[in-house]
Length: 119
View (cartoon, rainbow, N blue to C red):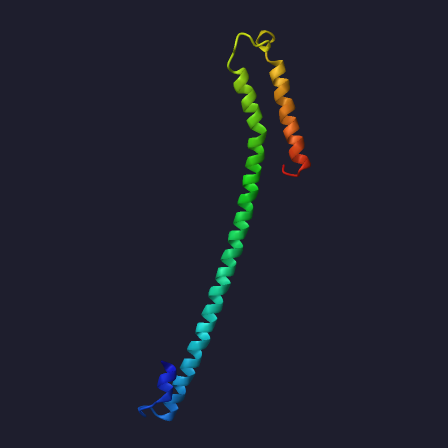
């Protein structure tokens, strides 16, 4: 609009006033350019923040997966021995075999995950 007023086709404005329309138009263009740059910068900052949050969430999910993988075999072992069948030989002597098996499974999982640098 400033450019159209600067053209002064009908001769309504004096030359001094027409010059001000050009100045206003140039300033509006610069302001629009600056606002566009700020918008792009804000989007880049938002994308960088989102990438950082995603990376942190991936690390958290990896840790939870490792913990789950360690405890799933233990849950399976306890569910087998929690049934209390009469024909299980471990029931007569107590549960030291079950405890030793659980500890071995847990130590094996921890060693595997430490070697792969997941823990």
